[in-house]
Image: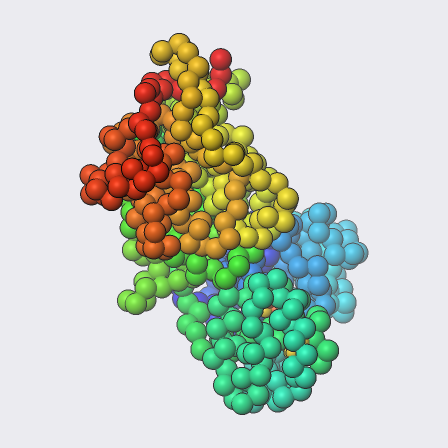
Length: 540
Ligand code: SF4
Ligand code: SF4
């Protein structure tokens, strides 16, 4: 599979509703234009379009939207719903591209042209630069024919949308070093310093920014010299980095046969956990950190599932052999497997897998039985969601949806802006033991339902802790403790400060770390618990 060829007419689809893209692909196939025209996507539409056609391509996650539009590669931009920049019309106009809105949730203030014939709509959009088509079946012909016409007229312009290096240098020399770009950048990136270096013809810092910046555009909106900072970053990134990556196709639900193979080791804690990377790309430090977290977990045999922009982000890192994680790890739901479930909506397949475990292994009926299934997952299934770049209301809804099923979630530093975390005080929890028929004080697992991590190291160390469950057997718990301790030592060079809470008896101590942990526990005055629940539940 090749990258997008900018020397062909390019149709870019943005959003979350794949229907308009399918009409475009159908029309191209009908007319035999697959070789002549490129169809690509940003956000979840991209993941769905590539499931529909092998010729469709993924540009990347939400964070790359402004950069790609500024690059001028797209001739026609088709937007459906959600995750679309509000300034898309102005940005597209600057590059000479035309915009087609296709959804009543995102009309962009455009007139509905659905009542016109396809040829009439094409003429109107050519005249006005944009139009709304709510009758999706008309989008196919309109987008494809527009792409062929617009491409001819802006062929040369495509190359000139971004400033050349010499122009970047000249632009940088207009910078007054007022520092406002740094002040307003949500991630406090050194924007001004990168521009100052570019004055001298050194573009490496701008190129570094390309890997981290999520192209919100705040820096340039505050720039007193109106410098096109995002375009400058994009050009430097284009020149300094390889922009070709591989992403495994979205695969949909986890199948019952897969659950049957791994359900027992997950429930008994022998597979250390299932980690779901969900949500948007509002990352504090670029996409790479997400991939590095996934890598660390895969090496430790966690099952990693990704959906939406997170699944694309994981593909945006390569090892020294030029391989992405998708090329290195299998796509099955198994220990050390890396699954791209599909678009954001596929996050439900993660909770779906946990529900299936409850259904298959505990034979819990699914109909009208929400509380019992959630109770089973909370107490037994070591699954954790990570919404590292949560941004939209949808991302917080996904996190809450996980929580309702008993799955804890870690959000990144920007997730704190939701102003809602579900934290425990870290003291003992109480459960009812169905076997011993009594209420019992137990270790605080899982410690929180929504918590935030300041940086990826903290997130990575919190994951094994939140995978712990009251029902863990000692073999499973010792494995989770092993990952908790070794990750902490790797990233913080010390033992976890709350380790004693999660070791119930000496049997929970991993053999390899026994001496070290016993010494730590002695210092903390730790006492083994007298009893461990056999069948923990909150429903009594
Ligand atoms: S566009 Fe990038 S550098 Fe500029 S403010 Fe946004 S994140 Fe920071
Ligand atoms: S805001 Fe503009 S003028 Fe001020 S330091 Fe940043 S790039 Fe320079």
